[in-house]
Every structure is written in C-alpha cells, then in structure tokens.
Length: 257
Image (cartoon, rainbow, N blue to C red):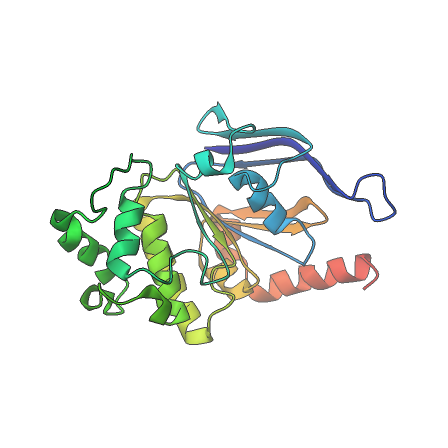
C-alpha cells in the first residue's frame, strides 16, 4: 500500500547547522495496517508524515502508494486520497462554519463546484448518522458553529470529516496530544472504531506510549531518522509500556543524555 524507498532529507545543508535526518530511509506499510509511530523529539516522526503527505519534499527517494509513484505529486492532489488529522484542533475543521456546512464541504471534496448551495438536503440524515457514531450528541447540533465545540468534539468531527471520502491512507499527527485525558480516551476509541470498521491503512504518531501499545496492529519506534523497533503480530500484542520506556532510556544513555 505505502512504500518509502531510499528517502534522504537534510536540513540546513552546507551550514554549521546541517542535519542529515534521513539517509536512505525505507518503510513499507501493508494495506489495512494501523501503525503507531513513537520516538523522541527530532527522531523524524513528523518529518516522515510531512514527506508522505507532500508538505515537505525529500531530497531524493520515492513515495509509492498503491503501486503509483506520487513523489512529484502536489500536496493538494495527494489529499484526494489521504486524510490527515493534526494535533492542533483548529486545523481539521472550519470554525466559522456549522457542523453541517463542514460535512457538506468534505462530502464535496474532489467534486466540481458551481454557484449553487454545497448542502444537499437529501444527505443531511446521512451526515447525522456519521456524527452519531461519535457518541457526543453532535447529530443534534448540526447548525452549531464548529468554533464553539470543545477540543474533543472538534477532533471527533475532524476524524469524521477526514473519513468522508474514499481514503487510501489516514494520517494521525499526535491528534490526541492537545486534549485533556478524558477527551483523549474518547477520541482514541473513536479512532480505533473508524480505522477498524473501514479497514483503513493508518499511520499514527503519538507520544502516548499506552495508546501506542493498546491500539494498532504494528508499532514503530524511530530514532535519528531510523526505525529501531518494529513490532507486529504477537510481538506487538506482547509489548508493554515498561518495555518501551526501557528502550527510550537505553537510547538516552547511548546518546549521552
């Protein structure tokens, strides 16, 4: 489904601050895999997501999705088949539009716009059924401005919106990090429900080690632009937070921290 082949990325090349983050980095994610990605700050997690989504170009290498080379494809064209939910709750939805208007816009993604209303009244019950899955009563607040929702409600809606088109890949960029613990739990359970039901190929960057252990079918730990831990199957099921903390401490000692 997704392959990163020999990705190279250097920041501040030719200066005293030169940082070679990726040097022939490879990663393959199979169709339907739910990959949790962890690692210390600067390990390459978010840079990897940015390269996949097209908001950052690699110096060299290829990005293959479903057998097609998308390396030169623009970010907005990749967005036709990729959904992304960010850490910042304000980025995934439009605050000045209602829940209904946000969903109608998402429903019309990749379609040509005319001068008529973007809201198809025949689709409203369908929109309600989608947000009803969140279990937050949003189906009864369709005319509410999204800017007045709580952070957890906005992230839940962002998940719904991201999944309204025929996605090939879902990217979750620390999407629970800005939420309080209760809201984070709710959004994480909702995430797992959506991913499992739709069998979405998913990459989730998170600093929450418990979420990384409890959710997903595969776990990757990154360090200095490399995958130093890659667990799936029984290894993934049997790993625990203490094991991951122990590995983090080993890395810290090896790095002289």
